[in-house]
Image (cartoon, rainbow, N blue to C red; front, side, top):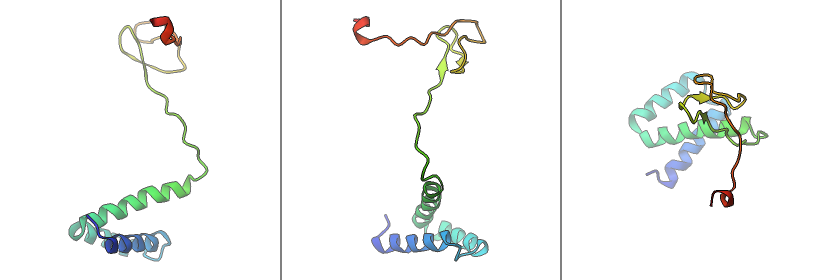
Length: 104
């Protein structure tokens, strides 16, 4: 577990890396050293680099609802959402939503 002091150090390193103060050569040496000696710091800085840079680059992107895979009820073959039939067995796909009161 990282102490508050180590977290602050990691965040300072992240800011230096993010603002291109630390160049590629030194960055690679730093990350290798952290991976060998300070594994928790390495994981935290890797997370910061992956997460916050992605959020900054896509700050106006609204998350969308992920579409679930649709499978044929007859053979279990994966069906594209845009298709109305299974290309494997020819079964017709129905997009009918049934209310709970209809089932009961």
